[in-house]
Image (cartoon, rainbow, N blue to C red):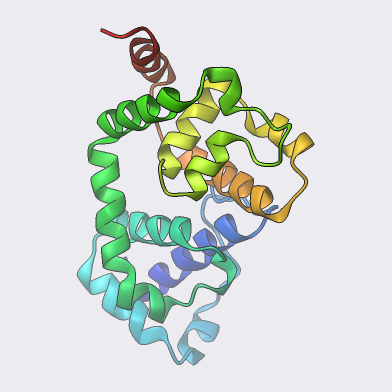
Length: 197
């Protein structure tokens, strides 16, 4: 990947995670960046550095990990990503490598203090599943997998009209296409968690 390609990838993923209407997959990662605008940037050094250090797939995943971690992807500057992004990226990689284990552990934790219906109860502000995510007890991947199984996001979108949920909902929506999982397998894991081995 050239430095300019790394820049285009950065813009496309920044738009994907930060803007409601832009879809990285629909537009095949394209952005309106020009080589002229890239050459005028004072921070182009960061893209040159990144393109030398990482493979194409690593650059993409590096960006995904950092945009996921950000509260405001639109304001995430490449210099900050490069300086502190490796820790975030390594954490993301660990979660990918242990996804089934983490999902099972976090699902057991969720179900030890709530039954299934309670987890999705929106009657008193934020439902427990959202509180657990906001409190760092479950990862974004677990939240996305639970949404793939129970399809709760659309229901929450109708019931929870607050900026906290809106940002989490957008994060789930934007991350889901990047998380390629076998829903049947995770349903089976969850069933085993509920029933026990």
